[in-house]
Length: 127
Image (cartoon, rainbow, N blue to C red; front, side, top):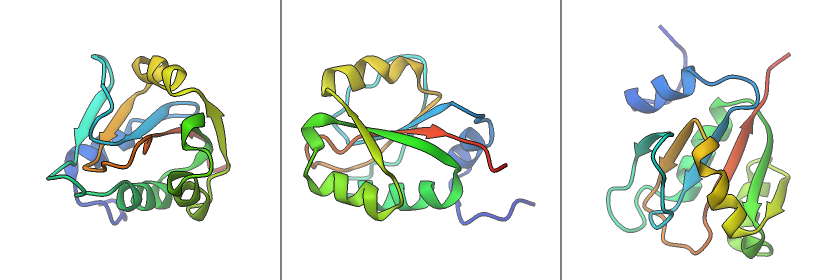
């Protein structure tokens, strides 16, 4: 049995398949998600589950090499949440971020309604 604090079986299964350089997106409830990535929908209602909660769990259970935020999130609470979880984010435009979504292996949709509360997590390795 795995030792993890993640109880959601579809999320855990999707994360177990990730490799170096794979992308995981933590998305607010309004981000348009294209066909292709595995979508784990954790949105229950507006605000639940929050971006902050999901990001905390993922950063505690993944090796993350880098992260990317929309430049529109610069100086926002979203950037602060990423920094507080050990992420030193790079920035691209929101349109560029949306264009990268088909390359993601997993998109975790939250109930977050804060504008631009989306981050791309780039998986690393633990050695």
